[in-house]
Length: 180
Image (cartoon, rainbow, N blue to C red; front, side):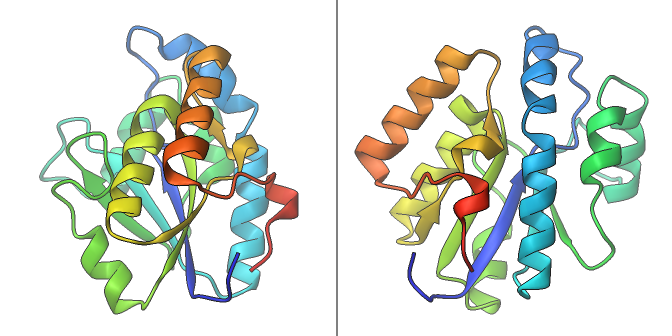
């Protein structure tokens, strides 16, 4: 990784898990939440901005706290308690799979002078993959710690990792090997 200014993205970790395949995704998310929490702590200690980008659950007029409370009423409470946004974290609502589509993320990253993105979260084979592709198209340097990404199945996650390595060339080191 270069010495370019970085930002940590935490994708869709504020989640209800109440959809088809949600139980499997929940179980796989439990395996990565502590890794993301550790990486977040490391990022904050290094002055790296932390940006949550999350589905809106149809709550377009609500704020971050309303979305969190909505998700905590469902299966996501255990995950949210471990990875809850801090008051100085950014929180962006997204309408579709990519964190860039229909959001102010790119504008925020430019204002923060970020050139390198560290992507974490769920679902690795959908939202993380699509965000990685869009970041690549915008010429960001990309790291995706493979122990900070989960999908409904291990096979789907491994497929996403292969695609990301082959087409995007992202650094996929483990979270404890990440340096800022």
